[in-house]
Length: 548
Image (cartoon, rainbow, N blue to C red; front, side, top):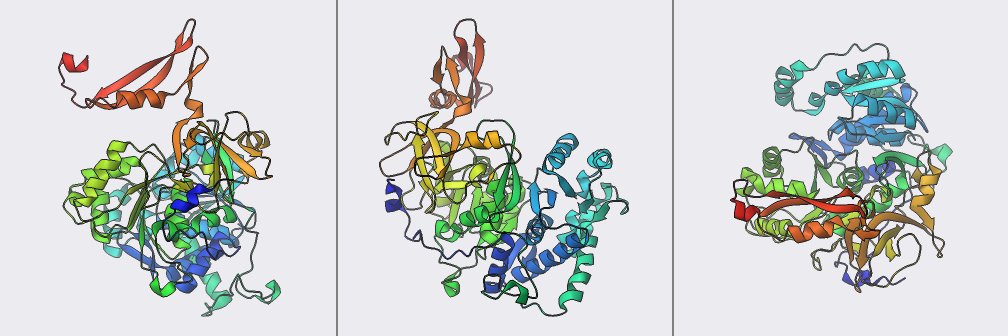
């Protein structure tokens, strides 16, 4: 395979890392051993160090275990970006259980379906969202429902303020039957934990050669290649799917984060590794947020700045106060940043790297954002990437020095990508358009209970490797940069000829009078479909000549 892309990596992207074969919990444990007193989680002004985070994880794991959560148990995590979500994921992983990540505002009927499809026996949910689900939960009778309060990890003054305002409107739950508060269960687990280990917090190294029977504090409950996380996606064909990911999938992507951002190796050059913070505003129920904004940071000793709700001015306040070095987000967030009055008034020279994905990056937005930060002392590129949940998230990302406008970047060192003729495994020449395919250690285990859909998405090619056929249309150039054109499922066939809406929209948006445009298919008596475009003017009061 022609891997010309390796010639355009940034200097720090060496392709050489030290990645032990471990679980997600074990990766956190390794980071704690190297960076115990560095901040791991920042939430509304509260800072939790790596050692403190591990303690919370271990205590919560004991509480869950006492409620019969163990290897293979599915636990649904229906939470926004709050500390309890982070703690839960690692505690679940420590026990060998599986975290089923769902949107915190999922309607009760959809939550019911998710829990039934995954065989979930336990639910973590925000107390404010619990009332809408009470009737449904009484019906399906899960083994345990854990209600989480926003105020649990706020400072005392902020917790008081919250409880006196928004918190007063949240009904209290009766902690009987299968309901319990997170704060109560974690403190119950703490008593068990302290009784087991007293003051001995010098954990066995999970990567040592010591026989398992000689280890006292931690014995691995499942293998790194076993299912660890369930994520929900439209799949490569557009219909809803439940994606099974392993610890190994997550770790093999997360390990590259320091090299992607241009930092030293945290475990080989520990003394040189700077204190970094990533804005974790992308939702943790999505692979982009769960891996790139949470796990890939924490496993490498990088602090995460949890932001539960996106509001431009609130984000501006948080960025002003915490001055994070790293941001990974969707295009909408960068538009919001530029609209924030607080951010527009401050120096941004603390930013090291900004990444964008999850949606196409308009060239106008890229140029405006880079000019915006440059005016405030920060000279970086807005680096577009590409990924899908079937490969955890990121497969390719633009380098800093050779960032190419319009491209989604270069495959990561352990990832291979190619373009094939649609509907086949046949690779096409550089420059020719076709379906994007991805292979590597981040490829999912498969869709849950759907082998037919798995076989449609993952093909074994002539090289014997499992390749994800992404359902995305694009091409690669001679240097190995990849370009995303269109989701294949959004092709409009006019008289049997494929028409790509994004191409039409691109032409329309070349008109400076337009704010947005959307091309859709409408039925036609003999062509089957024709294209209709909807447009939105920047100036709503424009005269008729402009509209025409």
